[in-house]
Length: 234
Ligand SMILES: Nc1ncnc2c1ncn2[C@@H]1O[C@H](COP(=O)(O)OP(=O)(O)OP(=O)(O)O)[C@@H](O)[C@H]1O
Image 1 (tube, protein in one colour):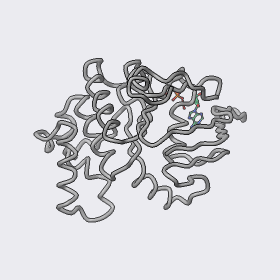
Image 2 (image 1 turned 120 degrees about the vertical axis):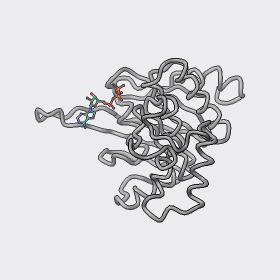
Image 3 (image 1 turned 60 degrees about the vertical axis):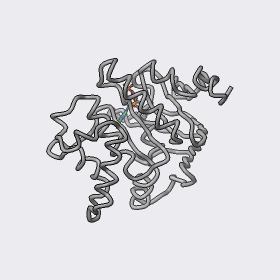
Image 4 (image 1 turned 90 degrees about the vertical axis):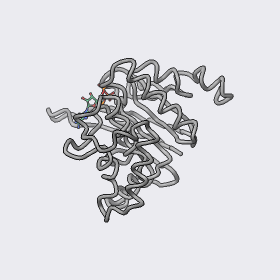
């Protein structure tokens, strides 16, 4: 599902020097896996997620996701890749405040006419994440956990096989975060590949693999109890 080879990413530090944030990172993630990426603040977790999702193409090395080689893709092809292969979930939800939950889920289809089928699909995704009765509400009238569920429904709208999540529980209290983590577990059981950057121990505890970014390198931390119980990676 994900194959990255020798990825090197540097940023300008604003004073004429370059800082190497990823230094020869390689990664293989199998379809259907559930991977947590942990590491200190500033270790490059979001940077890695952006490269894997085709949001940033300024790096050295190779990235391939779902059989699509991202390295060297033109902007239009990258946009198509993102719309069809990846669902993104961010810490701050990124919902449009003056649209209803349903309209937010429909956003990915706004490049073309919004068909009755699209509305039906958005509605059933909101049912799937437990928000059926609240689909006409604006985000301001939803709790943090409910907003994140809307964002997850939107991420699923294009039918991606991969969810890339950046601190998806970072803005939620512990109980609400636990509900969202459970939703990720269910989606994983339904066959989605999930890769989540997280500080949340409960998230890494349910992931099948935990990878740590340290000193610009990615190291396998453990295969978790969840993986061992379900007979996955050792
Ligand atoms: N656009 C940018 N220009 C310059 N430096 C950047 C840029 N984006 C990130 N950085 C730097 O790269 C490093 C890695 O940032 P990144 O956001 O990937 O870390 P992170 O592990 O996700 O951090 P956090 O856990 O705090 O969100 C940091 O030192 C950050 O300051």
